[in-house]
Image (cartoon, rainbow, N blue to C red; front, side, top):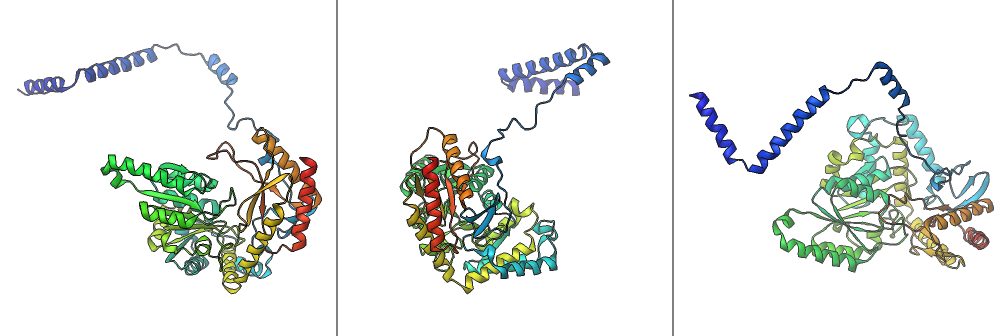
Length: 465
């Protein structure tokens, strides 16, 4: 009786299964049986044959051939403390290459406080924040940053690159849509890759092109309202773009954020500590309420002259990253001495707000002077401490322009001005970036320094080009 019932059930399965499925399963079964029989019947190699094959085997190299003359492999030897002046390859130079905007690398009080912290805590925790890596100076810095930016909470990362690269995928996930300026820096690009979201790039600093893309997305949402209801939308931009030195049109982006219900992330790695009356960045410069920005991130490796980065926003924004920010969870915490250096920099921010006006004045002055180059073209905003020098006449290829700019940089160092070609992973960037000499303005530059730098760069570029 049981056998008859089982037979009827099997017959029912076959009757209800589509013919193509039965054929496919049969073919798969035959293939498996053939492979098993073929494997058993295969010819076995002798011990001598096995040894010969092993001896002749040559595995592929882990790393392919690399051009020894690649610009990223060239090293310039620094033989002094980094500051307004620097000794490079034996040449005493005016330093226009280090992102030491406020000159804090030469502040002896900050150095002394960092050394005291070193003697108290040692070099570092060697552990992430969640595993005996959190010290009182970390909590103090986070509290100070939140109060300085007039926001609820801050979270500190141990490396500037990983800050925004971890913050973006902590919120944007597969199925979400992220609208991004096409000129964002490499750290943001890696964060977007990790998010696995749908990435939509708009033209650099072009709010009209962004709105065009938002309208197109709105039309697609009308066709599939259920999917649109579940899809989150983000907008990512930089305060000052590292790759161009230009300011972000923040007021226009905020209006679009309101109109199309976007979550706005702003990376202020260059603009924090350089823009605004008190150094609070692009939001202060444009008088935009910081509550309009969902997340503000910044590296501390520019104006604050230390290492690491931070994110500020609401309590939820910071707390969520403590469980989802990969660079926070899995990286050793920021060394206490460098954390103390950041706290001392904030002290200077609050105690001497005039330093920001000094930096902005030097940026304008250098911009005005460097616009007069005959063979080079200046790029970037007058207020930006990061500027780019491009060849006035384009060459046939990226390599040709890079080679010429490297020659200019080498000869400038020999003449006493340290400038560096902007380095990019050209085959990994979102779009080809034109080669340039990246100029970093220092608040401590004097009028004579700017004039001397202009004369040397003009003379060298005229002779090389």
